[in-house]
Image (cartoon, rainbow, N blue to C red):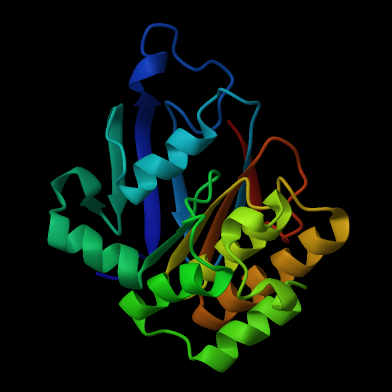
Length: 216
């Protein structure tokens, strides 16, 4: 199932049920994200940025309302459908990165790439070089800085085909220079695949060109 659009209809996290979400341009609204476009969801901490990504990725379902992929309610999807979506159509960079600290940087990336078969070794090494961490490729992730780990996680997220990529605070630990390099790599890959980008941030510091910004 290709994802041409992601629609949210009156979605509200269960934890906000009592007070609602006044002022939000996402919660309790009808919002559509279209493939091929880039979106920034900016918010303060604690307003549901990570929850939003987790809902779209099918990790959590503690919300009211409806989220649909090309008209199909994601609440109706089974395990096999989610596996296919996450392998071929929906990429995700979680804020906490979820790397295996005992494995090397390249081993963390290859775990994902073995599932998708999307990249060859040379392409992966080129991404390490573009993000300035080619000298860290064989080091255990536990010995890398948080910023270096974030770049490893970005490379891992790009080791699959996708219709949309969800980026939860993708450059929170990067300086301006590395932010620019990471944003350029992600934007180029999304453009090559004709994919959509949905990025969250506590401030307007995600250096991608966005078509629309929402306040959460």
